[in-house]
Amino acid sequence: MSEGKLSSRELSMANSVVVRSEVLVGKPKRFVRELVVMPDGVEIDWYYVDTPSSVVVLSMTDDMNLVFVRQYRYNLKRYTVELPAGAVGPGESYEQAALRELREETGYIPTERSSVSVLGSYYALPSETNRYVTFVLVSDVRLVDRSGPRGDDQVEKYFDISPVLLTVDDALAEIGRDIDGVETAMVLMLARAQLDQFN
Image 1 (cartoon, one colour):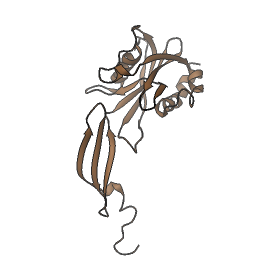
Image 2 (image 1 turned 135 degrees about the horizontal axis):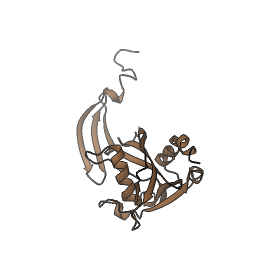
Image 3 (image 1 turned 30 degrees about the horizontal axis):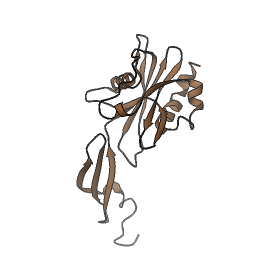
Image 4 (image 1 turned 90 degrees about the horizontal axis):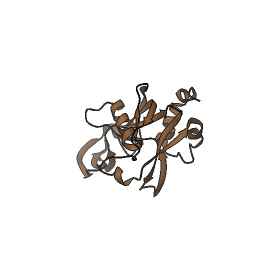
């Protein structure tokens, strides 16, 4: 390496310095711009979505159906089939947040026989956001609110959400078709071993 040139490790963004941070949009999603100075002095405007931790909920009814939501996604300009999901509130555990989101988006709740377990936690789209997602599995849920999903009072009231029940086989067969969101597909694949015992 010639004198004065930095190695690729020395040029790494891990060695950059944030000069200025600005919130461009505060809610419902927080968009941030940071002016970052690289180790070689180059300045870069870096944009990302700053989000709280969240949960994605895979739940099963006592008659072995998985509970999904069909909702309109504005940025895609179409309806999607996904698992219930949402942010973890202040003071909430992942399990508490999962059960709250499940009820808000589908009207389903756990029974006295339910088990709730964490399947794992992962970063979603780390090039664009710091969103950290925990996948939660809930067995033996039942419908208690037939009036339809409530959603939150910020933007979910506009999502046109409705619950959809699919068998394990049908859900797995829909990956890449009606189920084409990475998070939902990943949860189904992660939980496949557990779900196979219900088939």
